Image 1 (tube, rainbow, N blue to C red):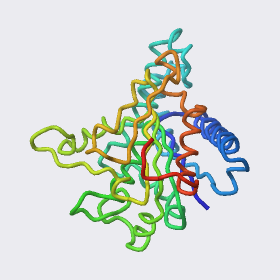
Image 2 (spheres, helix red, strand yellow; image 1 turned 180 degrees about the horizontal axis):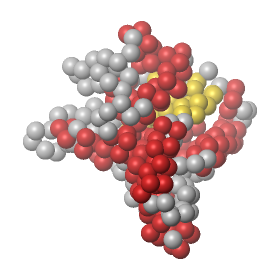
Image 3 (cartoon, rainbow, N blue to C red; image 1 turned 60 degrees about the vertical axis):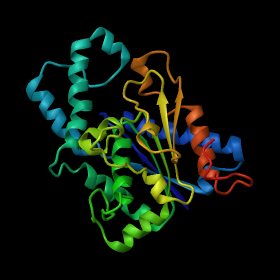
Image 4 (cartoon, helix red, strand yellow; image 1 turned 90 degrees about the horizontal axis):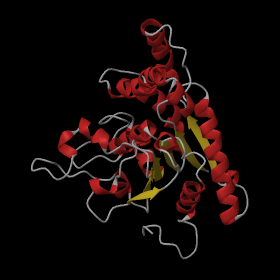
Length: 286
């Protein structure tokens, strides 16, 4: 059975669980509408919950630094009525996750993600759907799994993992779906990979390296300030496609309005089924 791995981005509280469920329901409806039957016959979902790694530390920092700040959940209305308090919350629980992930020390995020997905990626076909910072985590995993020439493949690091399981994970990978993803911005961690400069190295799309019709769809809300295009990073043709669409009327909503998107669910389901649908060329980007 094909596993759809869902990796959430930065955040706080139980909202992440609600987002997972919203996306799974939307994908199930899109599958039934397009192909009939139930998505659970051919696919299963794996939720990757890594926020537990950073939450208690962020809560402790909030308690120590801003003990009177009573904002502990995000909402656009609070951003209007309690702007300063909400900004403190966003800095602590959202930017805090980014700082923790980009740290060179063993912050536990990558190891938690790997512990969750390891059995799935080595035991059968899988695709990854990831939001925001989760998409960066997913790309890092795939980048090391299908590294540039001269580097050994591994799990989040050069050569990390056993040879047999790395080979299985490479063989089993199918597709990558990112939404609200700042993957391009995070290339600042590897300056030599930013294209267009005299000393830049070629950046290879992991889906191109994987072959077998693997595709990367990068969904971008037109008003989402966190979403960056990905096509521009790679030589054409490449198995990545930016899909820009209006998913909200105000920018404060745009970054959080992917999970229930009918358009995104439809596109994902069609790519998942493209290898088995008669007359479809899985290598062709439409």
